[in-house]
Image 1 (spheres, rainbow, N blue to C red):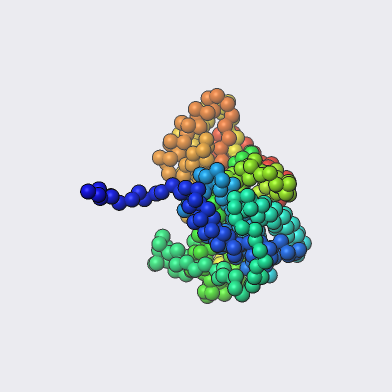
Image 2: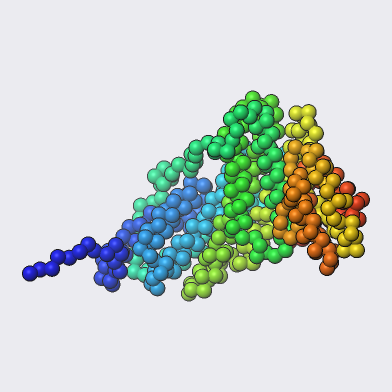
Length: 447
């Protein structure tokens, strides 16, 4: 009597025969369109168009998913092919975002000199060219690896057709209005979006100026700020674009342009940081190709992140700060109550008795006069200076530090409030101001 078989396992390990007769033929079919695109990319001597790079990105995403479905990253024979595909994906994203900026430069409303604009475009083209070389290097190594793992040698193929490969680049999303108050008036909403931009720009500038090591410039931090500015761009397009307010105050379009530029630069930075953190060392370690030396070194990648991505992102965001001042003035508002500012103060240990609750608590009254919040930062903690409770928590922590040595604190918020709080602490506690120096970026220019 035959025994009934139960249901089969959900996962089956392929044997060598199945790999040769099933997996490799499928991989051959999956990679076919990508290698057509690679032939076109290598053939081009100048900078390619966005459509070609976007098509490569789409094919690579599909192949990466295919390989992951089969667990290629855990297989000795196929893991390096999977690693190369992943590397190509992130280098390709860097190039695509750069090409997108290049294509959009004429439509951006930028309040900068032609000299600065031309310098940025030249630096952008150099960066795109650098990583195009890296991408072409990776495609050659991938083709070598394809032969090693048993893929067929690519025969004469149909040629790349732009119309055939063109995929719609623009992504459509729903309005990001879940946290928006529907009662807000149009002008109040416009001011709210601008304040969010100014607060985020100041946070990013503060981060950059506090970076002590290149290792702090990570994919995680790039994604954090990329996400913030993407949300601001989406809010602008939902509530401000093509409205009476935007028409009345044309400088809003300039703010939108600075947000878009910084967003796409941070997209480039995120992709490069991901490649550096996840793929760069592995690709170099396991390669036997003589072409690997053409791949941008880790030192070059760090320099790109530091001197190009962060430097220009900050430059454009601070330019947006200057434009915001002009908008507030046109609206008849006092800009210093909305423009964000950051100051560092040194509190001296010999004045510890001047820094306790009674003499310092009036700071909450100063901060309370202003609509926007002012914060004190100390030892990685943030305290809202409008809150007597939070200040009462901060003071003992700072006094503990003062009992051992001088202490550095940071005050951040609307410029008028920050100036008033700092002057109070200087007079009452003997604090002195410390210059904020962005030492990591050699070419940093603060507007």
